[in-house]
Amino acid sequence: MSVFDNTEPEKQQALYRNSLNAGAVFLKKFDEADHKKFFIIAGISDDKLFMCSVFINSKIHPAIAHKPRILDLQIPLLKTRNDFLKYDSFANCSYPIHLNSESITRSIVAGTCKLIGNIHNQDLEFVQNALIESGLLSDEEIELYFKD
Image (tube, rainbow, N blue to C red; front, side, top):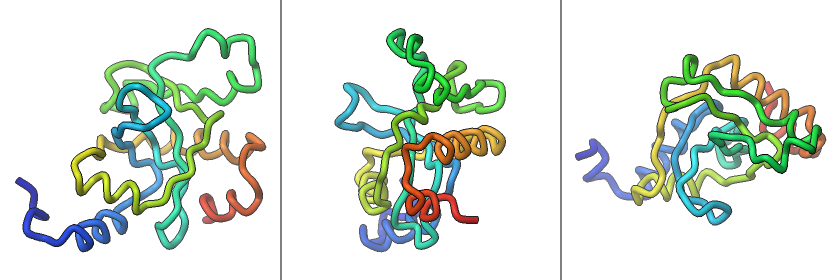
């Protein structure tokens, strides 16, 4: 039972949207994967409407071993610093995911997306720097998601 059970879904979504922050880790099913995936909110717009996220993978795919540019964008996440992890993992910064907060908050209200925890602050900095320096985001996207 949740404290929000008697709250209208739209109000629940607004409350959840206001609580979204960079570094938050969620578990959700995505079309790109055949199972639920952890993802990190790496950056978020000031109005909390748009987010840049990355998947967490337990292993680096062997095909990436021969692609140094992509391999460099796999940021290690240690279980010792991120207690929600079952084992050491990697943030895949070679595949930024652009999300709007409404889709996430709607999924939270529906019970198909769950907050798992937060990554260590230093790991968040590593992920953000990797994304900013990757060349995969435009200057406008960097300003939108990572403006201080």
